[in-house]
Image 1 (cartoon, rainbow, N blue to C red):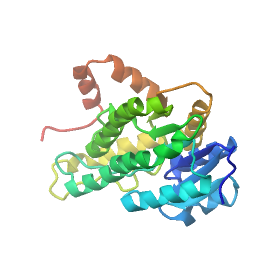
Image 2: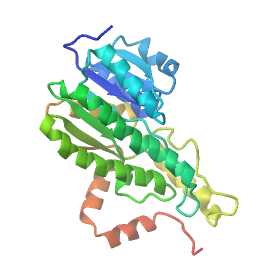
Image 3: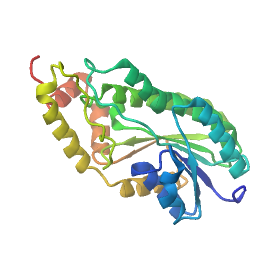
Image 4: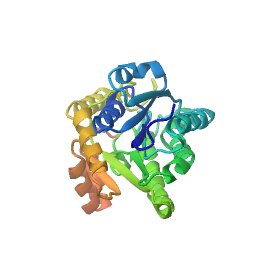
Length: 278
């Protein structure tokens, strides 16, 4: 059964917990119909049981065929139109450039970059039927900040950012806005897989200290609820935006990466990590 044609519809990926869950709730609180996704539909029951305007859909981002089936299901549900596509779902892989496994890097890029490219392709026709179609990419300050021990993740966010900038130019003639949310520290379980290092890694002596730095930074982060409310408020205030910087330290990092020369940035971020002479 299609949703009310007059209702604003937002598709939000990765809603089982964390930022995605909070974004779904923040949109729903504003009266927006939310198409919420997770790998398993049952992991969204806690949202759908309490909110009539949140609808659960299973979505496996690593399966390109599944993306097309998802688009078809959403089109049937909404009458072939959506207003907002929020690409939030992603995965994480923490390894140094020396120790990373290429197969794992490929898996991460498949989810964090290529699946998003395909979703944008698939949903553009539905967004073009909206009075104000918007694509919202949940990015990261790591697109600009060389956070140690996660070069693959950083690279995926940099790739997503450049793709987003180009996409913005290409869909502007269709009246579709593209917003990148450049995310600072937000409390989440993104680091639950831990830091990868093989048994012969020269970085093992400092692994525990790097973990301490990362987990403490995560604890200091903005709550997912506060982050989502602020992001949704800005998305819905009718002001046209290209970027939203949100999360703990996001604005400070924005200024730092905008005004500092590269050599100084390298010095600043090198000083944060206890790398020995290997």
